Amino acid sequence: MTGTGDDLQLDDAEGEDEGGLIPYAPDFTPATLGKTIGDDKLLKWLLDQAAGAGLKGALQDVIADKCLSHIAEEKNRRDMASHVVQALGNYGLVDADEDNKITLTTAGTMIRTASNAERDAAFARHILAMCGGYRLIEAIQRYELRGTKPNMEVLNEELGQHPTSKNISTMRAWLARAGVISKTGAYAVIAKGLAAVVGPGVTQMLGLDSAQVEFILAARVLAAQTGSPLLEAPDVRKLAEARAPDVRIPSKALGSFVRRLIEHGLVEAVERGKGKGGTRVNLKLSVKGIKLTDDQIRLLLEQSAAGFLLSELGTLKEALAVLDAGHAEQRGHAGERLAVHMCLMLGLRVTGWRKRMPIEVDLTAERDVGFAYQRWHIQVKNVDEEVNLSSDRVDREIGAAAGTGATHLLFIVPRGGITTAARAEAVTKSRLTHLHIFWLTGDALKTTDPIVLVRSIEGQQAALVREKRNEAERRERLP
Image (cartoon, rainbow, N blue to C red):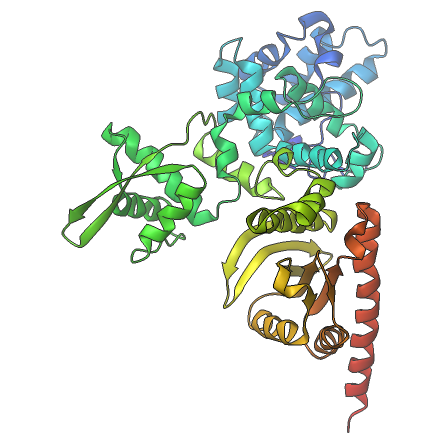
């Protein structure tokens, strides 16, 4: 629920799916409300009325009389008007105090004062960043990666909504006005429209950790303040840590830190200069076209399950094809893409690539399941000299994972298998430690059916649960 005013919330009986990722917003659609006002004028009209209405009841009355006059039953008009006011709050456009006085939020004021040509895009940016809209984008793209286009019912299931909820269709209606999502039929993301609304530079920031994001945001501020594109990395680091006190950016390894941003195409290296403390890292921003505020950028990036545009991931079939035919570097990238596919199939959110802790982990991911938090390490073994996963390799990486926050370890061996000894080692360590250890080998990956791959993991999980249960019962019997 994204509304900020308690008075704008429904009671439990009235809004049983309001706790989902998509704001509860029945009847808040241009088609329903724009019959007399006009679809293209509706949003501005609603915000104008909210700015001048004073009390919540007065706003509900004017919406019922002006927007819903085509509804025959007066009670239905009043109920729908109440839903619209609630939706304005849930979308973060209005707020109500304890006396039911309505005021526009900062976002509501910004969208109201936008030009007619820009208003739909401004609202779409707000939806994507602040109202969980990017989760809807990625949910659609996950189905597109499987070669299908989802309907509202399957998206409700994907996003934890009530099966009959219309909240997704409400969000779709507003995003479609900005050209981000298809208007009718199966749900589809319009890549050009998405890039036009948020700015193409935002996609380059997907996959950064919090320190990297704050460094780029600070660099934008410093460039604007100094009026110069040339920046010194130590100055950017100080400003980033001042703006975000919880963030720590390395000072001694600042050059390596900046190089990772260069690899993302976010900054360009400039010839290094000398400073009082020795060589100073100079840079300039190369990322352009970002149309979001700093807060919107942070919130949009937090929603990404993969850390980059899923439309750039390619299909599972394509990744497997490169693993068979590509050269070593191509196979390495394809192996990572395969790992991302597995994370998305398992409902995991990718949190990092190639992290060292203490050995290098190809992919880290996480998810919440009930009351439990899962931290996954995914290791992709697809180079020629490691066709089969050995027990020595398994033992070494299990030992490294056990000393971190990992709860699950997944080995992906797309070009080979796992030895009998390695399989036994994984089962034994799963039984005796807190880790859950899984593997996917070339035989399993001959299929591109996501259901088959997920069931392979689920079958291993069932066996591990039995092992852990037996071990727990054995320890309970000890004197």
